[in-house]
Length: 125
Image (cartoon, rainbow, N blue to C red; front, top):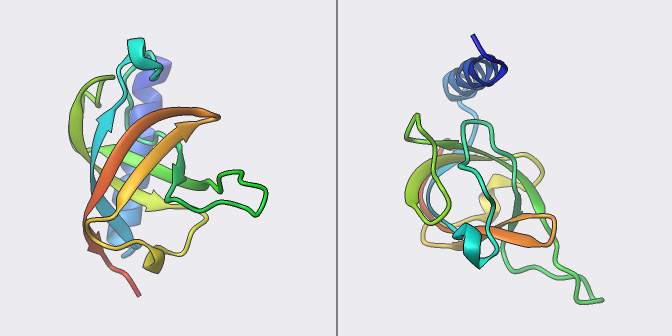
């Protein structure tokens, strides 16, 4: 068994725990930016943790990013240039901030790697 298989197994267990504990989360539709357009090189898999941007900026103009964790619905993940659905858990932003239909952008540092939309919200307070 490879380290990636171990990691994916751990992420599946963590996802099951979060779902059974009633953790607030969202279903989102994601489109990954193509590699040749500046996106990431590899696919995203369970447990991927990009920075989420929902349009907020500091007075200086700098973007305010929030921590998120994504779990693609497909076991093979989502490749650059593809569109797919994922479960999204917010790690640092109150869940009540997001609404169904809201536009999302995901970053790795300064590089935008995906755009998305909130499809549904589950277990919100």
